[in-house]
Length: 282
Ligand SMILES: [Mg+2]
Image 1: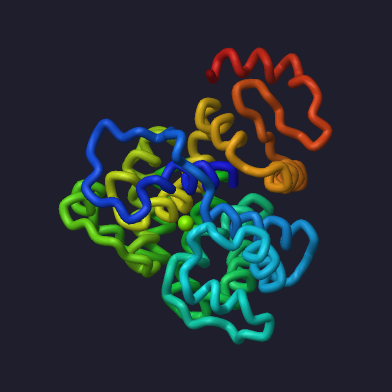
Image 2: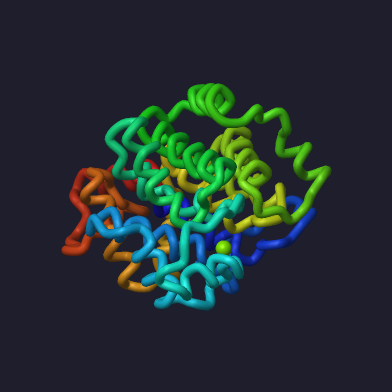
């Protein structure tokens, strides 16, 4: 989940940009969290409290109303009784990483993902996109193997016939799941590190914060979060989001550790073992 948030923050300054080339700067003072992070938090909190997804989406939208939501989503969020929205956009897919973090089986991840996507993205395309990201993020966490991810993705979801280079040649700003979800998957499959997945997302262009957010959750499962990016993003989110991250990781049985610093609600010193390990991974 923190990987998805890093992706959102990295991509925030590139949202809508096209034709970015090396060197790609991942950290910049103007970077900030956007709607992708807010609604990922909404999913996480709802899962932790067993609340209704739509109540959590609306509550978090009210708390952070100016974070770059789609106009239709804001309209939906504004009215408590608004019916399920028939959107094909990637707004459902960008927020599913907590579902993968707490997932107990592929079937359970799929069912939960449908429950959390339907209120705002009730179309076959959007449900497929959200399910693909949730399932692949869950696989990346439990079986960090890119060839397995490609097999699952191409068997169950998308053909993945284009490469990062192809996408760089034909850039456009697009929100649809059938366009942007495969881009996020390819950004990860062609990478060999978390940073490279982020760089690929920026080069692909368009809805970069969401592409990098979707890629970031999968990349975290495959390679973990680099301490420099993890600590940087940690300082850019409010305390209430940190508390939810800590609680979700604890519930999922995952470590939330950057550079030897263990982030826990009852934060103490990192264990000696973690301090020693941090020397080797930093
Ligand atoms: Mg955004």
